[in-house]
Amino acid sequence: MKEEIKNKAKKRLTIIAGQIRGLIDMVEKEKYCIDIITQTSAVKKALSSVEDLILENHLSTHVVDQMRYGKVEKAAKEILKIYQLKRK
Image (cartoon, rainbow, N blue to C red; front, side, top):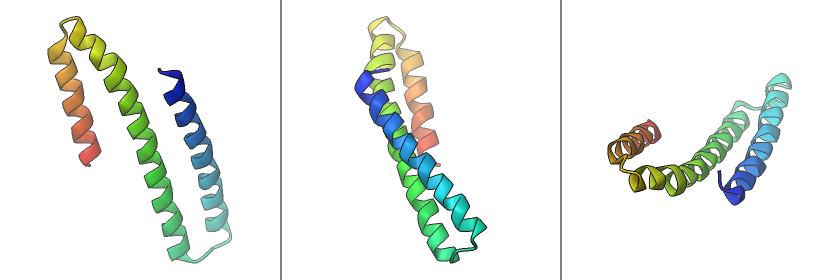
C-alpha cells in the first residue's frame, strides 16, 4: 500500500473509532434518537472516504500491475466487483 494512502486511512480510521465510542456512549446515555442517527450518518460518510482511499490505492497499484502483466480480465472483474459493492 502506498505510504501516504496508508497514513491517511489509519488517521481516518482512528477518528472513526472515536466516533463509534461516542455513539456507544450516546446510546448508553439514551441521547436523543435524531442526534444518534446524525452521528451514525457521519460514521458512514467517514467509512466511505476510507473506502475511496483504499480503492485509489488498489487502482493505482494492483490494477495497474495486473494490466501491465496481461491480467486484464482479472483487473476488469475486480473493478466491476468494486463498482457493484459501492452502488449498494
